[in-house]
Image: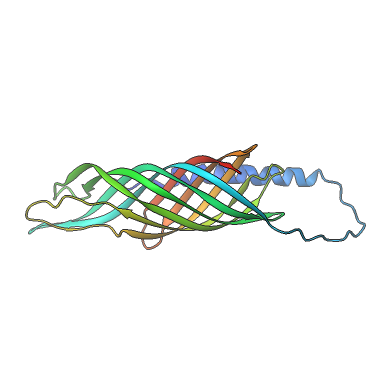
Length: 211
């Protein structure tokens, strides 16, 4: 069982991020520059609230050891994450905190063929919470930015007879790149996350509604 290919997920997020940035540069060049000094007005932040529902997939790593061999163990999970966000919208950027509850399932397998281990439909549940900051890159307030998520997942593996199993950590920290595109009060969003401490990744695609 191989590790998720990070290039595909990163390309999806970067493609839309570059598209939004290009749109912003294009619109900026069409604006007439006024050389008369204007008074700068500081506007208070606007509080925004969203409900969200995302499909997510991620991997976790453990290990399995028998009397004669040892192998890394990869668990590939996929599921949904339902929650919401509280944001503070400024003129050009937004800061926020978001969170959601995870319900998922996964498949586990040994990386080395010297050990046979295969388990399917392993239920998982938990929660994910993030602090983030994003920049508005279009007139409709599409945005790209960064998040620092922390995720807790409860998932139990079956221990094979005569083996020692090291399960993945339940609590994980990540660094994420996200993007969001609004359509009136609705929006679509993506997130690409790199787990801190290993090369595994998380990708999510979903949407929500702003109040």
